[in-house]
Length: 167
Image (cartoon, rainbow, N blue to C red; front, side):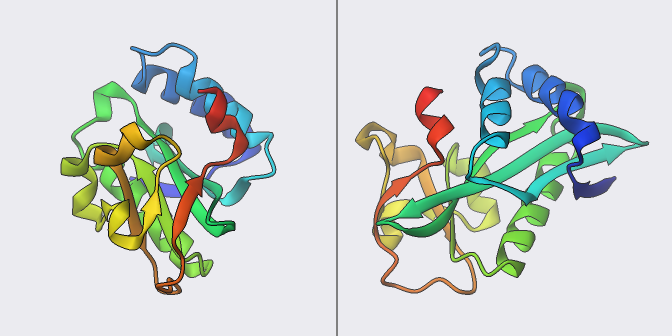
């Protein structure tokens, strides 16, 4: 497996992978990735794909968000083709994007997802860091992971990149 930055040539395959991974919500997350790509919050260095035998089978992205008006990252979506799920692709993508975010001196990554899955990557309830979700109903699944440059004063409401509001 190879993890690398997404390129312009990957746009359609990333859409297809995301659509397949979220088949229960046609257009939702795949449309979100397209909208994020056109948004000011898009960070090309944090859009990664996983290849197996030269074929893209997974994708993850972090985009610019904020906590109390200070820069932070929102992670998602994380997408893996159904035939490659539970084979380590998602795990490899998560480790790669968190390492890349840390190398870029980002302080915090937040996401909305299953705590049983994301806790293995160091995510804890976002409230642990004093970070609140855009929707209070998300609280049980709203998580954060501090990176090397995190400081305790990074607290407050989290705001995702604008396209998340349309999902």
